[in-house]
Image 1 (tube, rainbow, N blue to C red):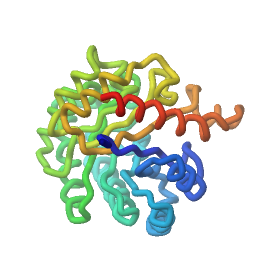
Image 2: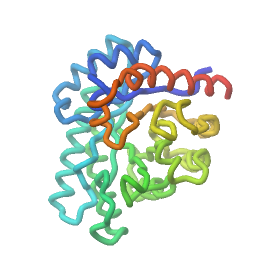
Image 3: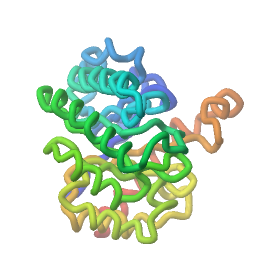
Image 4: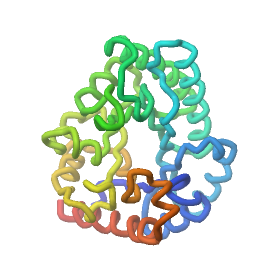
Length: 277
């Protein structure tokens, strides 16, 4: 009996949307997660047509969080982040997607600019506004927990749960990522179990951010924990080339394995574990 739905990222770093969707569908994935590239925003309905023709869904939009900061001290900066996220919600709605990945602060912002409690409050208020807008389109928001090398604000599952509780909107839930969990959590499976009822989305990548089965992470307890909490979201591959700067790596190396082997290995590895549960 099938327990999980699997998705794979397309667009941006993960290859051209139009050519990747048929490949991912052919491998047997249930959905694609589309990169939130600004230049894509007017093409959502066209991308949806391609997905429909290939019999594959859109699980979510992976937002570019490298610039927006909805926990910034200046309201004008926070408002820019809110406006951007509302545009992402519109894109997700055009795609027929389920949800949008969101974080209250900017990726690689390592130093607080105000008291931590105040930044969390600003972030929660900002996401509440986006959540109200998203609710009208039937879109959920997935608050991602990043590791310490990406941010200082939300690093562990317990912090994500507390923040989502602060936001207190039914369409806002926790998002975890096994790559980040591997850095921050003592027990990754327990972190998932503790998010029962509020885990809306999951990114998967091995210890080296390669395909599951290509690093040293044991995914058996992770998949078992997902089954135990009755996880209903997508198990979504977010895999990155083996370089500190993925875009530079792509320019200098053959990416055949990344684009062709990673998706196939991921699905084979996780489905084998699923079958043994």
